[in-house]
Amino acid sequence: MEETSAQKPNRRQLLIAGGVSIAAAGLGTGYLASTASASTTAGAAHTPTPTIPTPTSKLCLPLTKETIEGPYYLDYDKYRSDITEHKPGVPLLLRIRIVDSENCRPLRNKAVDIWHCDALGIYSSYEKASSGDGPGFPTAFPTAFPTDLPTGAPGGGMHAEPDSDTTYFRGFQMTDRNGWVTFRSAFPGWYIGRAIHIHVKVHVNGVFRHGAYLGGNDCHTGQLYFPEKLIEAVSVLRPYSTNTKTRTTNEQDMLYTGDTTADGMLAVHYDPRHVARGVSASITLGVDPDAVHDGQDWPGGPFPPFPTTPPGTPTPSPAP
Figure: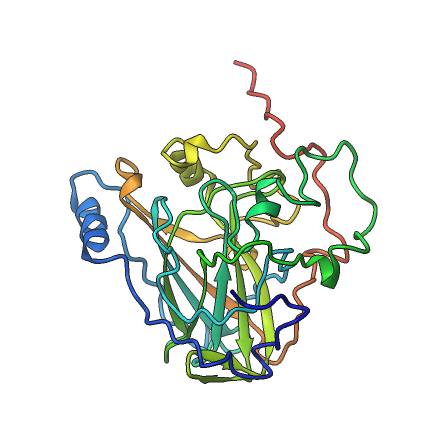
């Protein structure tokens, strides 16, 4: 396991001892064949591999909104495409494109870092904390909303120290000449107080060497979301159906800002009759490569606009 953030050198300062070079691997031809088969069956509503038109000089994007990195980010050098480590869940093929929001030119040779929880809402490296067995993790939604950012432990802008040596659902890739990276993962689950999401960071101005990204800075920290219709379809499948934590919808989430690409909403493709076969998701992120973000930006202001009802509160059905 990596040393804790208080002990280990940052990867932007020196190489991980011996270098970390993990070969990019896929889920295998079985997954790709199953999604292709699903898309060609009669009545299939979606295609398995989304494509996004190449931006032109007339098509430029608004900046994708910044947000907090959360307490469970680690500066690991896990250079790999397949981040599942054999964890169960609905196969997820995630494609992310990084472009300069000003001129829509793809940003090549930039490091894109993602991390997310498993089907039961557990983060690798923080299995005790994120399961509710460690300090500081809520067992229920608070009865009143805080009025300011928390202070004290866990320090480092809400960053927590790891409590296990697992690394599943964490990894980074380098963008290709068209700005794309591809990850093979499993659909994330949920935990108390947050909608289903995937964290993402874009590292620039560094050097990729021996499986590590050295130097530079973060020009974007964001979170990616899925449409509720897809989430509902996945949530009834195992192992998600065994997750007993109250699920927060997108609209109930304190960091969710909307359903546009700039808000981090993913475009998804899947066969609604066979969701268990896999989901393909994609997004183009418009970023400012000259910006520097520390991962502590609350969307919409210095502190998030809290919902009026706690996450998980049932939404009343309309009167017949």
